[in-house]
Amino acid sequence: MTSPRPLLIVQTGRTHDHIRERLGDFDDWIAAGLRAGGAEVQTYDPLGDTPPPAPETLAGIVLTGSHAMVSEREIWSEALVPWLQQAVRAETPVLGICYGHQLLAHALGGEVAHHPEGVEIGTVRVQRHAAAQTDPLLGALPDEFDAQATHWQSVRRLPPGAVLLAGNAHEPHHAFRVGPNAWGVQFHPEFSAEALRAYLDGLGPTLGREGRDATQITSQLKDTPEAASVLPRFARLALDKQRDMP
Image (cartoon, rainbow, N blue to C red; front, side, top):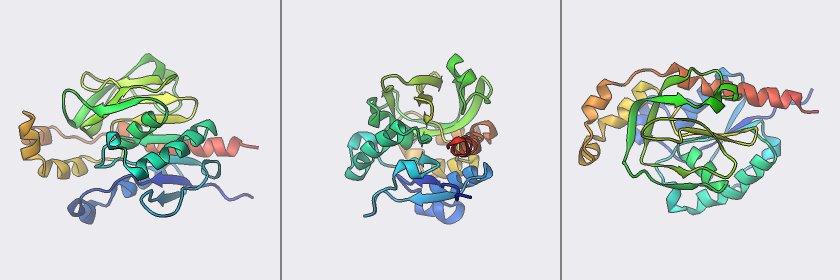
């Protein structure tokens, strides 16, 4: 029997040291969700010297969040653009999260920039669009669900041919799909309320300058199991696709 292909986590960024020491890193949180869906997981560091594996050798790809900004066009980030384009052409399942969502949109011809209304942070309410009802990844979610969010930039224009799946009053592009197997989600399915609370602990002055109250936002945090279900569901979709291959 052929060995199953791994799901590859592309670690586009790392959390703060004090959070990582206590709670783990972005790839740890994502890996836990993917393993809950039965996947074998590997992590790839795009800041290293090794090129990423060919998309055709992978069961799927997950792009993490980052403290970087897609609009800064960092060398390592731009180097992922043709690779992501290749992955989408090959119909390798792809899931971009926050920075990864924005990078996927950028790679496919969308536009990413700072949100004109500033940061969206906290446990937020996301609404699905009608197109999501039959979507393989988001179709099982309710019409409205809670999700963790923290971002200053967003996808300001979707890539050509993208299907808009979810949004809210602040962020209209919380989820999209391109083709049959590539998704971007601005919200964080991997974040627990505890992880986001750790971020908010250090953001009081920054949020205050934007007229936001970190203490109030923290008090309204809650667990988001429906958003978290996206990760194991993506793993199962990727594994099912692999099993269906000749």
